[in-house]
Length: 400
Image 1 (cartoon, one colour):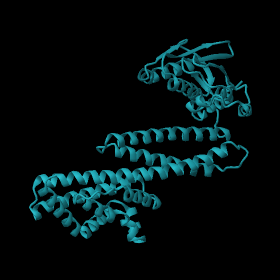
Image 2 (cartoon, helix red, strand yellow):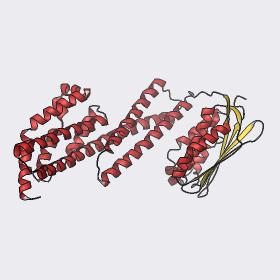
Image 3 (tube, helix red, strand yellow):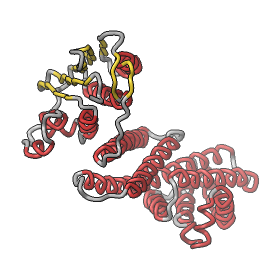
Image 4 (cartoon, one colour):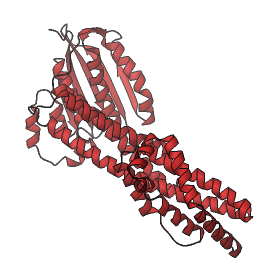
């Protein structure tokens, strides 16, 4: 920047520094108007409310004076502070947005007072946007780190309970735990959604996308854990009624075609157009959906094939075949209803890479439990590198 611009930016920095008390007061008043939590925090501790914002402003003034500075530490501290006081991620982002708006107005006012050149003001606005961007990014990253740490701890506790089904765990505790975990995931998703509205550099955008993807995975895993716990606790009722299994299968095939096309896979469906059965339609649908989605997710190329037919007057057969990498021995054994789950604990860890790829296998374990509830038998034929075929024999009448 030119010497003249540097001098004018230095004057703007001094002007804003002289207005700091007014800036902080306006920020406080607007935050009190927008957020009830801000008023509560001010009553508890005014210093905790302002936290790192005054120091952030000092760093911004130094930036205008062309003095090297970093917003990382003050922004991380602010995110940690807001986490400690129970702020939602959206509220943290809104704080920075309001500060941005106030400083923008102050910069515009400085032009009239100091008679600054519009190019200098534009340069100051650009530096402000970058500073606020850093403030949001580092605050959210710290907040996200703390949220994920708590979520992992809660999920670890819940998983420990799942591995000890004889341990008493009141339903009310499950509701509270699931509420806390789902709330955490919702807050994270909201924050990532808000951040995508900002102009982020390539590295920051990639980090946000990665964290957003991890949060979606966490959400799916949480839902599976809660479903499995409900089944293990005997809270899953079987509601038998007549329905057309062929219609359910055709509807599922149609709804999953877009996902298959997105993955460049051929989703094939074949079977009679009518197949009346007596069973729990919702659970049959969940079994099919879990297995087909698993096949679509882990098949890189080729096809996923769904076939169904009436085997005898008493049983009907469902077959799901894919050309994926082949289900690991550990997961195949945990899924097969003829295998005791304790046997899988003694298997070799040679398939660790495949195990990691298939996650915790909780979705497959849910399929096994649902099959047991419906008196269905599932078997798996998996060849490494050649794909997996699931065979499920359902009773035509699950009540018998």
